[in-house]
Amino acid sequence: MWLFAVSETAPRTLTRPALEALYARLEKPMFNVVLRWVWDREEARDVVHDAFVRVWQRRAKVDEATVEPYLWQVALNVAANRRRGKRLKAFFGLDAAGDVEAPGASSEDALAKAQASRAVRAAIDALPEKLKVVVVMCELSGLSYDEVARTLGIPAGTVGSRRAAAMEKLAAALGPLEEVPT
Amino acid sequence: MKRADVFEVVEPPPGGLTRLKARLDAEGSQRPWWILGPAVAAAAVLVLLLVRPSVEPLRTDVWSRASLGISRPAQDVTLLHASEPMVQLSPASSDVAVFVVLAAPEGEAPAL
Image (cartoon, rainbow over all chains, first blue to last red; front, side, top):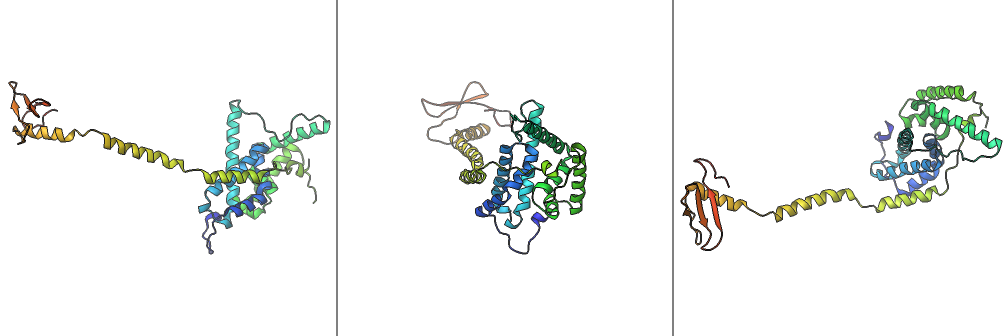
């Protein structure tokens, strides 16, 4: 994997200002990615913080030049572990649903939006993990296909095929997905 | 449904960087408590070794005298033969500390 590939230049140890600058840049995309695993805003923020703290704990072994994909991997692992923990708790009846959509919606619009949000969550959760991680990373991380491929350790072509497969499954569950030109 | 609705971008809760800094500061100030366990265990073993009463020299001394059947020349110890052939009385002095030694069969150390 490229993370630990031998570099021609001397590795730079991760510094605290560099980590904080990285957080300022990655907070929002990383939060949105892990939110699709834990479906709880506070917990998603905790997951992002956990990832940064863990990378900081291992800073002696981390090259600043390659820390970003490593951060993404740690965040995805932490999020997947939290998700498994929540499923276990839910299995034993110890966990409530997440708070992505605030309860108590009064208007019809808000109610419809809440229903749509639940449908989206169910459709994303129903995706196989391999497809889910690719499509969520492609749509929300802000990384290019190649960067997603390097981060996940898979070929770029696989990223494209898995993303397409995930989109098909989402369209089957939610109806055709309209592309909005930007 | 629009693709942007499926992958709606949500704003993270405010104050994220401040909280992360606090966590990183707390991380830096933590002591390596995992070192304490082995250190305490090693200290406990050391104390046990130092405090443990040493009985081995006495046993060795009694065994050697018993196996040889003679008393070691000493100023205040005399080997006495009791009426019972399996027992030897060996007072350390005239008024204190009498050792009872069971003689073992030939070629074996006495049971102490």
